Amino acid sequence: MNLNYPLEEFKMINSKTAFKMSGEEVITFYSQLGLFFDGICPNCNHLMSQWNDETKLSCSQKFNCKKCNCILSKRYNTIFQNMRIGFQSFNMILYYYALGFTAKEIFELLQPLVTRQIGLKTVSKYVKLLRLMINLEVHEQLSNMILPGPIEIDEACIYKLKRGNHGRLAKIIYWVFGLKCLTTKKIIIYPVLYRTRDIIFPLIQRHALPGTVIYSDMFSVYWNNRRNPPQSHLETLGYIHYGVNHSIEFISSLSSHIHTNTIERARRTLKQKFRNYKPKRFIAECISEFMIEAWVPKDERYYFYLYLIYKYNKMR
Image (cartoon, rainbow, N blue to C red; front, side):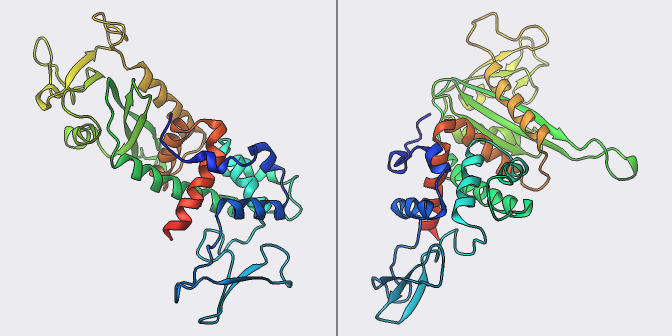
């Protein structure tokens, strides 16, 4: 899917080649991409001069402002400012994360590859940082994303805590609502507290203009099933709405195009992701991660995450 990201500027080298780079080569590569401090003094906006600190082994370049005598590191005001690991290790974490590995899997893969051991908490810290940038990017994209249609919609429980304390049944259920455009192949997933019209209908109106064709099941939020034939609640909002009664059929007898199989397939993939890794605090970030994996091809995610780092550094 093309989201108009300028990724060509970040494809200077192959991602597999980037994975094998040494620490100094990673620093040079990141410098060419503009991921470090740009050298503009934050105090007087004067262009700072560069010099090398020979006491440091890596990323030794510093900036000196001759106007206000300010000395700043190359990492200043970037996500690398307080980084405690080498750039080679960070680049490996980024590469494995782009391939879809979890923090625990990345930690296990790094052990035979790095000379200085990295703890699981350290790997999790940078994975959470990447998820934070992804979440910010997804929210920015969703703020003005309109789906032309036809659109499949569906809601589902991704997982629930089966038991609480002392053997009691837990009341925590994680619901999501999804939209899948059959024209652009874009998928949108929202975590929701309840499956009610007050919550679901504003999400539909945010991404679908009146007159858009919508396919759904016969859930009572979308349909008044007490009428014969059932009456659509979405048609009152100006949408062209078709439903599929899953107790009878999964593809409508009216047309083979009327179904919700595509969004349900995406929902199963999301449930599988949460089944393997059940986050209790970062639900929105993990859903944003799933959407980025659906939007960006796997062979371009490494460059996409480099672009997010570049964009995030400029926002700081």
